[in-house]
Image (cartoon, rainbow, N blue to C red; front, side, top):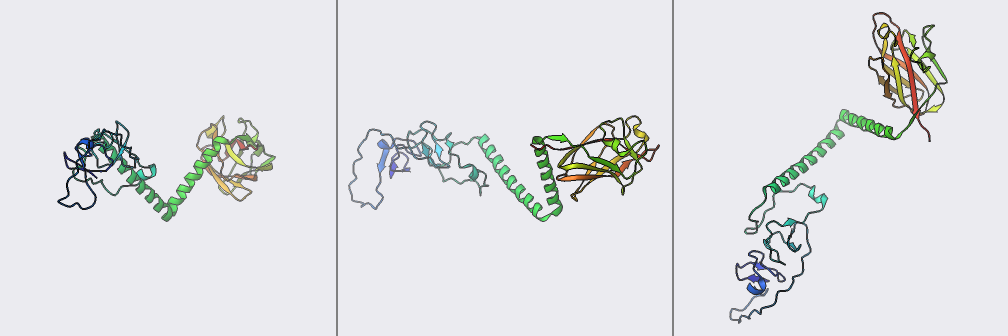
Length: 313
């Protein structure tokens, strides 16, 4: 190794400049033998050499990168071992991204005399924020995993939200086309307001009948197996909207055995709703599960129903 005669710092054999004081070691350094030296051994004179370019050290994660020559230096050095420039403002070699996300065990402890003279306050703030964010992320992941594994209601809610988001994303890329019924019938209907008027593409006409939660209001049949995706519905009589009851919630019962609920708002404008569980059906029964009441009539009115299926390429 080379001992600096100015400050006594021990340096690597191939260092050109002292890591502590920055002096040029070819002039102020003294070679020290690794093994024991006899006290009476004569000291060999140190020949003066012309400065030579020291080989650059391969930068390692955590090394200080000299801003003058770009050489990598051990984090304990204060001066570059190649060009002798100060390393106070040197940039530290970044670690791989996956290591930077792992929480650290604690602040890095430096050896005495190797700490930089000044550290930028902004750097400390950034490091503190990053450390707090990583810990918060780890705790959030652990908490989410624990709730998902132990709480059935929470797991069901998450699964429902994921499926809903999946349907929305799929809806962006899917195209829908109207699907026409081959027949439509009702358990009850007024003579002048038959079931077929609920799907005649004329919002001025409507189907009307007395219904309750146990009555199958409408039965719609298709001439082919279809994947239902959307529904547009108008409720009430457009001319006298409050003169009759309006559906508050519909329950669609498919011939596949699956069902889905359609909540409605008390508004005469068209309402568009997604249809879940509507794949591979040829018939759907529309049940009126609740109504908006009217003081003038006990009849429930649906002006128009439009159904859409997924377009088959």
